[in-house]
Image 1 (spheres, rainbow, N blue to C red):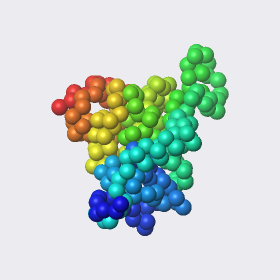
Image 2: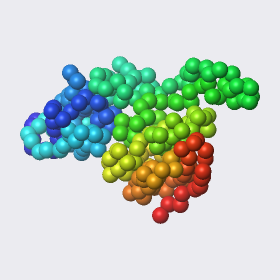
Image 3: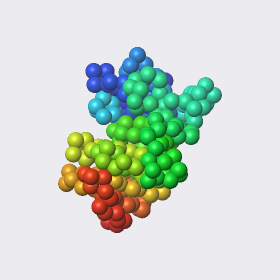
Image 4: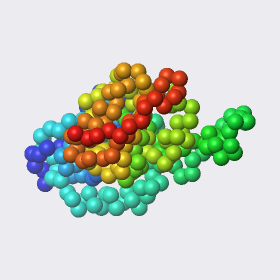
Length: 259
């Protein structure tokens, strides 16, 4: 039965098929088809708009129009079918769209290309430097939905984009054992990030947050973005801030006190 109700509308001209919106739809109503996000059937969309904040281009909005009524039973059947066809721990978050935005969780970290041996390193330290500690993909804040499975109950590391270039042992000393998000507080959308971190803090159950920034003034905005997001969420999570010099030294390391 059709009725006038709220439902998602997607602007084809704005949508680039990145797929950020897909995993944020708990009902499975969204899918990338022919390079664009689509509502696969009106009855799967509850019209609440959980997906809106995940679109970096603003291609999604809520409108009122005549549509099939939301059908919870149909949603349950759809989700059960998807789970049978592609188990969550093995399936990508969506098919099609930008490959760099496809959610992936890795098992054992892959070894990196080995550097020439160094006489000043122990065998253990040398092995650590030759192995990537990254456990998931993507890592850019813009591309990771708050509902990403690798954020659940994680220790969260938030890196300024320049840190991995300046700090040579970032994998061993910071990334190992953590979920990683990266961004630039100067070049990226700060307000969007605040809202995203608010959702992450509220929904993911992260254990703690470490922000690692450069000593340059523009980098100082990143921990403030995370802190404001945490305050907006109403959840108090232990937070540490680390400052790296442009020559790759740790200049400061301290606990951040929530408001």
